[in-house]
Image (cartoon, rainbow over all chains, first blue to last red; front, side, top):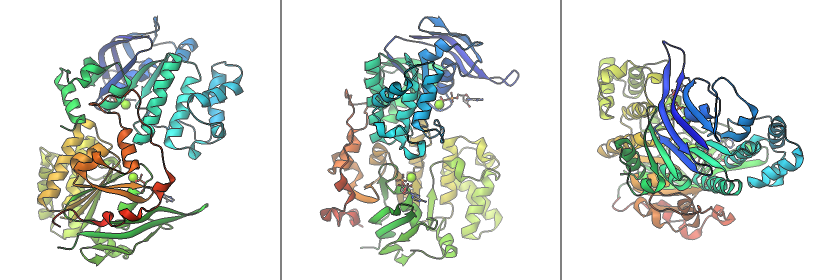
Length: 247
Length: 294
Ligand SMILES: Nc1ncnc2c1ncn2[C@@H]1O[C@H](COP(=O)(O)OP(=O)(O)O)[C@@H](O)[C@H]1O
Ligand SMILES: Nc1ncnc2c1ncn2[C@@H]1O[C@H](COP(=O)(O)OP(=O)(O)O)[C@@H](O)[C@H]1O
Ligand SMILES: [Mg+2]
Ligand SMILES: [Mg+2]
């Protein structure tokens, strides 16, 4: 579903160009859930933004569903395939737009019909009752806002969801609800996930495989079983695992 | 038995709202000895307000009430701001979540530690500078002379938080209140910052109130844990027994965590119970028990 080869992503122009991601590569099969972990600043969000077409300054190859992504052109079909959910449910929703307006606008942008029934369906899908339809972000809890953000991403009926720390700002009890929801949605809609989290336990729970990043590079790709079985080899991965087990 | 460092009885923090009065803290009682006491709970449970109330930092129209709030036997409840300022930083210090918001962006690191120290110790500049260097070394900052001249934006998050700890501990307070001190830091540097804080608090025989939403972290790092729900303590436990907690709320929180060492197909979801909001008469005494030997 997603193939990334020799991907380098930079900010700024020479001589001030900074390469935030340097020559990374990985494949994600259709229906698979793949994790990205690593310290902050290691380039995880930068990869997601490039795959989402939000940063044109990259070289290498990004292929979504067999079709190469071009740095210089955005096309609508592509954005129907790939959607992104951000960490901060407070910042990612416009404070003056009701849930109904957010979802309705997204659906219209995607050229969808039967807007009204689709909004109902999306709210059902993310476990928000009808009562939430005309609420504004300040009338929602953090977990409810993240549900709205997920509903907005689902509006385009994507096949690949890019999830950037989707539960890091939430309480553990709410995190459990959102992670269960994401697991259900993946099963129901056959979605593919690329999930960023700093929490290895979250990655192990949600993902089949993961890449460990450090300073813009992938140091190791592991299966969740290898992660749990203490079979990581790169010193940095072992350090991360030890830190999250409190050793 | 020696008097506790800090004693809190029936603490209440109330805000007027359009829907009437809202109690963010509803009758909290505990004693703090020379120990590491954790306050855990979900966001909104009143953890930060408890810390702020102790330090006299609740802004009007918010109100702080208590049957008692004493620092080594002396009441510090609603003291005039001038007296409270002397206590704040001098006897009780606070480290907040994000050093970026707590450090002054236009002052060098050295200037800030020196100022903080002089405010309470009234020491000459030379002595304050020596103290600042000593504190930077104590939080394991290499090349402290160079770091003294840097500005907050030039240091990493983990280093910024160590600088905050150095600054807060320079005047030699008896109590440190740390409100989510590592939540903004990377997992890989959290342990380091915590162990530095831990060693300083232990060496100086201080009392630490460690506010966090991270149950695993506090079970490793603290001596005793208060679990807060809706402005009240629902359970108090020795930290190493946290995983044997009995209260359904504490159990629910623990069960909702994914674990690296124990895979599950589906995460347990917390089922809330209205009864958790009300005081449990059987637990009334447990809140104020001191750890053994104190
Ligand atoms: N808009 C930007 N301009 C310049 N540098 C950036 C920008 N966004 C990110 N970076 C840099 O790219 C690197 C990787 O950042 P990021 O992908 O956000 O890391 P992560 O998500 O792993 O924490 C960091 O060094 C960061 O400072
Ligand atoms: N100025 C205020 N007016 C009304 N309610 C407030 C105010 N400040 C905080 N609160 C409420 O007090 C409760 C406790 O907040 P806080 O102590 O910050 O929670 P925690 O630190 O446990 O996340 C929350 O429900 C919050 O919304
Ligand atoms: Mg990021
Ligand atoms: Mg708080």
